[in-house]
Image 1: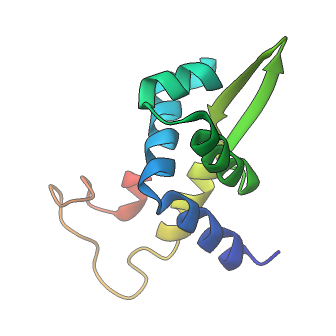
Image 2 (image 1 turned 90 degrees about the horizontal axis):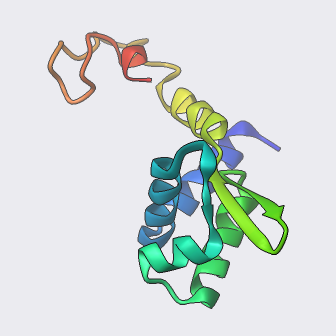
Length: 114
């Protein structure tokens, strides 16, 4: 599939406030991830709603799931997010000067932010 289409689908998935909250909670959890029940409790989301949003995030590879016995562990797929951010910044400064140090990107070049 075209990289631009995949990128658009991933950004669309993160464009939903609930899915963004889910993804951020999984990023904070790190490599250990979170069980679906723990994620539901932490975010206060009904099980059916959480399941729907997780299915979307898994479908675009932003989240992985691993079954451990009867528990389903969810993890943020940080490699995919790194690729996503890299895609957005790949052409940084190709048509103009980069933002100065102290800018919103915290560096003298966009690639320092990635």
